[in-house]
Every structure is written in C-alpha cells, then in structure tokens.
Length: 291
Length: 156
Image 1: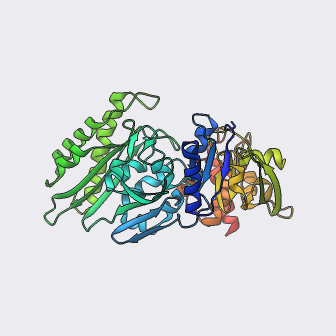
Image 2 (image 1 turned 180 degrees about the horizontal axis):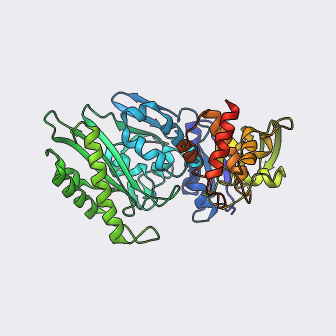
Image 3 (image 1 turned 180 degrees about the vertical axis):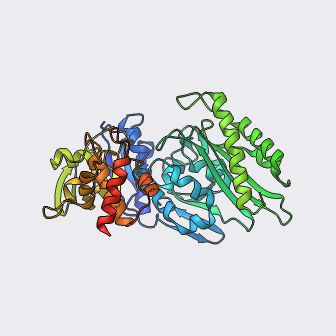
C-alpha cells in the first residue's frame, strides 16, 4: 500500500521545524517514529500535503531527572525507555507498559512523543501520563508552553496541540517516597491494542493512607479516560480489598468503550474493572503498603 | 512533488537513488535496488517479513520511508553471508529446520541476528520476545527458537 503523495521535509533544528509548520498550517503533520502515522497514510485513513520529519532534530532524545521531574524528549524511542535503568528502577508504571506496546520491531522506531501526541485512545502512554499527572511541553512560533495531560485530549485524534506546535518533551513529576505505580493491560496478542488497560500511580502518607492517586484507562472511550471519582474515593483511605473493589467499580463506570472484535461493551467494562483492581493492588504493593 | 536524492549504505555498499517522498524503504530495497530477499508480507507493520536492520536496529521496512533512511546503514538478508560463509543464524535455521515455506525467514534472520549482536546468550523467553513481531505460520516457532540457540552457541 502506498500513501497519497506528499512533500517531505527534514528540518535540522526545532526552529526550522516550527517554521515549516507555521508555513503549511494544517496541511502539515509532524512525523516522529511514524509507527502510527505511516500505517494511517498507507491505508489512506489520513493524508497530508507535507510531512515534517523531526527524526534528525537534535536534542529531542533524552531521559533525565531534573528539577523534580522526569523529563523525556519527544523523539525518545520506546526501545530506549525499555532499556533505561532509571525507568526500570523508579517508574514501574512505564516499565510495565513499554514491553506491552506493539512489538519489539515497532518499539525500535516508535517514540514516546508520537504515542502521546497522536491522540489515539488505543495508545497506552496517554492514560499513563494522566495517572502520573504529567504535562507535555509544546513549542510553537510564540515559544514554549506546558499543557497538563488532563487538558490535552479533546477527542479521537484531537488534542490541545495547535497545528503549528510540536510536542517536544514529556514532564513527569518525580514520585515522592512511598509511591507506586502499575499498568495492567489485557490484549489478545502481541501487536494488538488493548481490550482494556488501567494505569495507576499513587503515593501513601506516613500512616499508609493514600495521599495522591491517579487512575486512567486505555481504549475505554474516544479519549484516554481519567477515573477521577475512583482516585478521589481512595484518597485519604488506607485501601483494603473492599476499597480497591469499590474504586475499580467506580473506574469501570467511567469507561465507555465500543464493541468490536476485541469484545462487547459489557466485557470491556468488566475487564476495565478487573484490570483497575489489579493495577491498584500492584501499585500499593510497590508503594510499600504491605499488600 | 519534489524528488529526493538519498544515499544509503546497504550491506556495506553505498547506493544512491532519487525517490518520491512516499516511497517505502522496502520498495527502495526490492524495486529500486532489486534486492528481493526482503519480503513484503502483510504490508501493515504486523508480520515482520520485511524486517531489515537499520543502523543496528531491526525495523519493519514497510513502515519506514526511504527518505527517512537517507544516510543510514542498512543490512538485509543478502548481507548476512560473509565471504561465502553463512551467518550463524542462517546455519542454525538450516541445521534446526527453522523454516518450512521460508516466507518469514528473511525477517526472522534479521531480527535474530540483531538480537545476538545485543545479547550473546538469550534465554528461550528472550528469543521468543525478540521474535514476537515476526509471524511464522509454518513452524510453530519451536525450531526457530532452536535455530537461534544453535547460532548463539556458535557465536560465543
């Protein structure tokens, strides 16, 4: 399958890339790893007159802790996240998720920036960023701005990113002591999107009660779904099995999946409940909640 | 639509081409360079028959633009054999019957040769994970795993 014709641009700097986007407006699309965009162009679900490839723009490929944040450059490949000791030791929610994204060959090309900026509710990292309370740094003609993940997703493939902006960095608040995160995903096979998946990131206080909690669901609606009710329910509580079960129910109630080959609406909602409970248990265990 | 002049190093040889933006890497390899060892299977980034090694990493060449590979080093299945001597993974697939119809084999060879560059002693689980983006409809993977283990031993 061949994409419809387009012009290809390979800017050498971020400023050049932003200028190209400013020139071509919504006729242009940013190409990072291409693992979502190229298949969409090939099946002609989308077409753009111009692709702006940021693959050679320097300074967009890094994983570092800085000023209380984990900062990840938009062009960081999934394979680099998978091999990062920092991610493995301190961000188990990402360490859980990355090996479950697509397949190893796709992860050699696919980037974190592309995964979160694409606006596909089947992508795993948007829900994870909601649970982590992350924000996205966008660069446009007027400079840089930061967009909270929970303000970013507007609809199916629709985000707060303007056509002349490039997502350059994902910024995750470094978790305080007694934090734990987990991602639980059900998929039919390698390479498939999730039937359902749940992302949980929480922090306990000195007495073991939940101080902060983020819960979000993948493939549970047109956008990643933040289960704020469930997180609020747990906050201030020392979560026992009953509280976990109740929170999982509240999270599942927030999901509005559609029926497809991966299952019926009822099945997917039930899986969202089960996976939320699993992710909560794992996150609590990792936070040192003794569970 | 402007054409782009690109240059790649493929199996050690520098090759140049003038390509349309939308030309896929797999078509550059097969149709422009006339190296047909790399197969097109599903053409949707699932099956891995088109796997080549791009700057050290195995990737699905049906989902990379030829222009994206400009300046890169590419190894295809034609580049595995050195001086008339099969690469250990090729020998392993032969010795352990790692193929039947052979359609997935070029992709399997590229993925597993790259795995062994990174990991000299992969466990069965690691081999299975590494080839999880390469589909084989004949072997059931058992002999492919054995072939990679054979090659790993040979390379140590």
